[in-house]
Image (cartoon, rainbow, N blue to C red):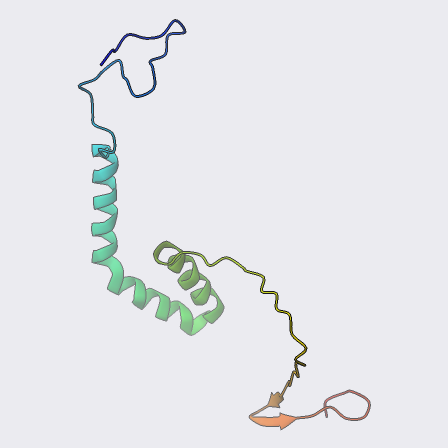
Length: 114
């Protein structure tokens, strides 16, 4: 295989100026060590993280849910929205039920809830 550069100073596709260099797809050793360190730290602190989220949830449930959602992004892929179109003559009926203190509340004639 020829390793001489072309006239423009670049090598032909599939060739390299260092043919005995690192094989394609071999991970960078430093990046690999960093990943291993982060994984070890996460494995070690996982039970504490659950405690921290529970403790936060007592005073700030919304904040705890935000932290939980932020962490979930690292474990689960984000779902993308998809539009669904269907040709149908079916009628859709929506029912909305309002509850106050466990009791069903219905609006009065003026539209207000009593």
